[in-house]
Length: 80
Image 1 (cartoon, rainbow, N blue to C red):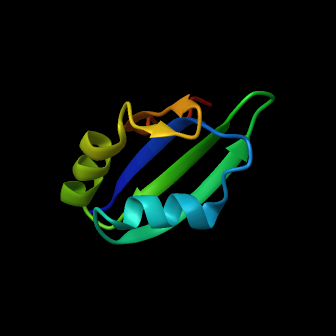
Image 2: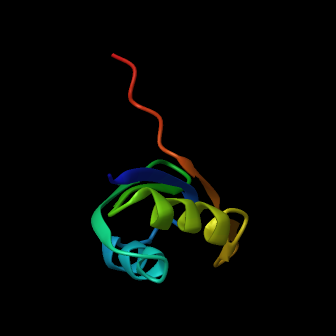
């Protein structure tokens, strides 16, 4: 079963390819989307399984990317 991860506080110029490479170290990346806000970018990453998703959270939460400290969590479903 896949696991969805949300990575917040990415630098504004972060690309899908950069996020895919960063998360690919921990397992198979199924899908990446990057949304840019006024101040930062937010990525939603679908990992191939729960184990690799957990590894991404442990490995990248509070990691530094450029001048930014990343906030990495399991993605919550959008409220409608």
